[in-house]
Image 1 (cartoon, one colour):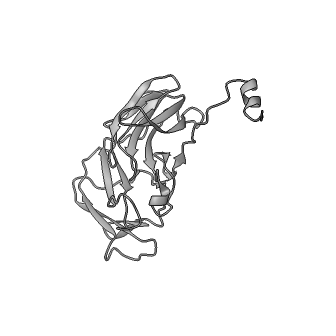
Image 2: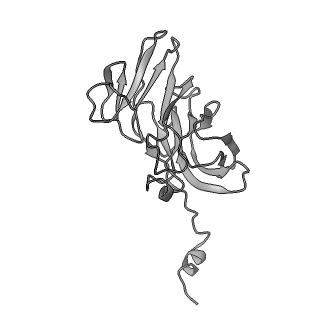
Image 3: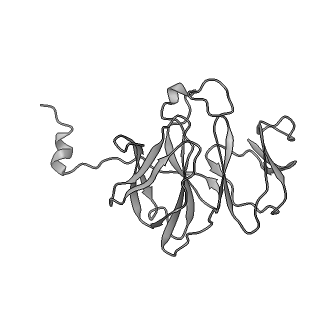
Length: 228
């Protein structure tokens, strides 16, 4: 898509699972953000248009999610841009990685985020589609295993490696967004469900890899491929 601020192009050919760097705007003044197809030349008949008036000295995250199409998807969640006031460009404390979580998967249920490598326990409780977590998680920079669970905590939807240390994210503040579909076949064969990290510098979101349980021993690994 193309993103316009008022009638001027702000982001040209801005793709799915991409982030912009922070952009400065004049505080206390209404301005429009319009979303158009990438072939656009102006804001006429915009796919979506939103008006904002932001506070001086504050940082904001704007996250686009939802569907432009009214068919071919189940469920239909209309396109929207969600705003988080109090965004960070770096971690609040040296040696940490601050993580803001956003739920942007239209067919995923209300979920919990559980850290299972420590375990540290439940990090996010009952986050629904279109919601940010209430605040940043201020985590010691390390490599974690995150379980995306249903709201009861009894079913794991998927497990991911959150390799904050391996990715070199010390002192960073990032946004981790759930995106894609749990059931791509019911959603026009779209992207499969995943967790993606957005950096303050922008660019392609970083996919968190799906966690794979390692074999418990050499014997277990050998026996798993043997027929009797």
